[in-house]
Image 1: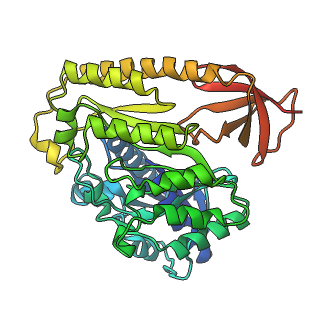
Image 2: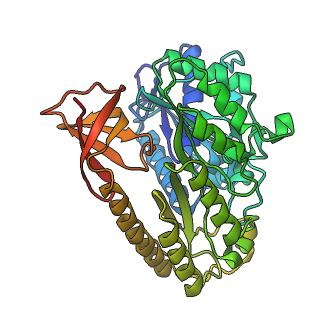
Image 3: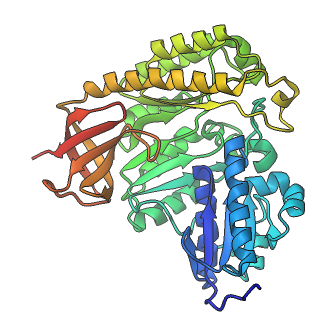
Length: 434
């Protein structure tokens, strides 16, 4: 028999998926806090809000399993209310309502005011940029736009997030100042497509201007650019990266593939020749830049020759950072009309082969760092080690620098000059510079 919980109402926000979802959860939590609600992130609470991801198969499966787990807890009387929001809920609301009816209500990606009302809170427009950050205190994500206008054949983001909508520069600067006042030292710029920034608001690309404006915010030491798009890349951004000390010599630019036939089918609006020329422009403009990219393996029609071409190109480009993903056949996307003809075991084998190649490239590049002294930020203490990152590394996805806490003391959240003493594929060992 179900027994009603008597715990004080505490709202547990559970975040799945990417950094954009983390940002959205933080905004939700900030609004709840402003309404004097007791809110926690991925802890214990008798009211649960699951912020879902619906991007690819693995993410959708994780989201569904998480909802089912909390639905079972609700049936057992361990929680009182269960709400679901985010991309999966936006995309599959009708199906979810039918298949998991124990959820009290489902909300889409633009339903924040309605979700707040269901939680007994009011949406407050004046809380510009106010949110409860869930990342380590030294860095925070700054979402500069929502949605995407790109026609990529494999991507369902426009279905879930809508058209591209830039946020005004003055609003973003105000939010950055608020974060700096809370001790944030590093801003990580995120969007579905950061290089499209400004076209809707200002009728021209304004990412370079935004980076300059953010660089003037006192207290911010690093600004890191994520999710650039190669087609129509605004080259004035490179001038800012090269000239502005606060803007990290780093860029995350998902390229997805390099075979012209695959790129054409993906509707990426570029070619191998244009992409290679752009990367060479990066290297010329900012020689020390760390370039991170992501690639999709097993796209419909991807041949062994396409894969060998991609592998040879990765060897030639020698990316500092690289991630690979299996193609996911998504309903209502342009590519869903194609036959998903690359077997899953072939997709995984190609991912493994490319990541093994990248591991060797990363090891070779890391060996050149031994003996060098680099500015690092210390993210956390883990066991007997302080763990930090260089300017060339983003949280969670890139290299980390480990310092033995039994021999050296560092302050979490601060910058430190560290001398690299040893290096592996994706980790560095270091000691503080005396």
